[in-house]
Image 1: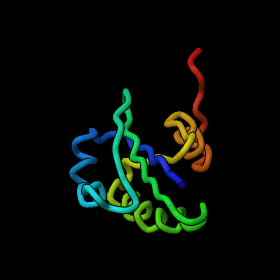
Image 2: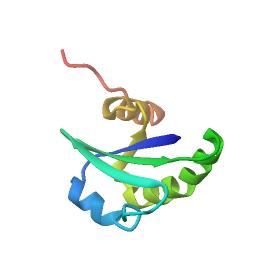
Image 3: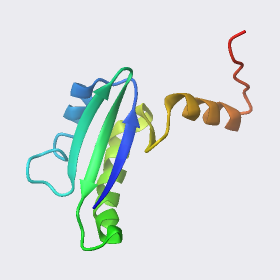
Length: 101
């Protein structure tokens, strides 16, 4: 079994559900579901395979499609945090983010 959790911000769980409704249809493989948190929504994609690699291969095209549909609302996956992603993206642009005084 393998799973990927994508993170999104700026769209509510219901809107994300609309965007990926076909991926969340009952009986689809891999399975896709959403979970709302304060300020963000997780999209979990899970699959079973004979090997972990096979499960990951099943997840890959669905993950790519969902990332595409989320667009700029998607900010990371797994253990990524919004704060960490913002810091990384601003640093890549050469912008310093200062902590509160």
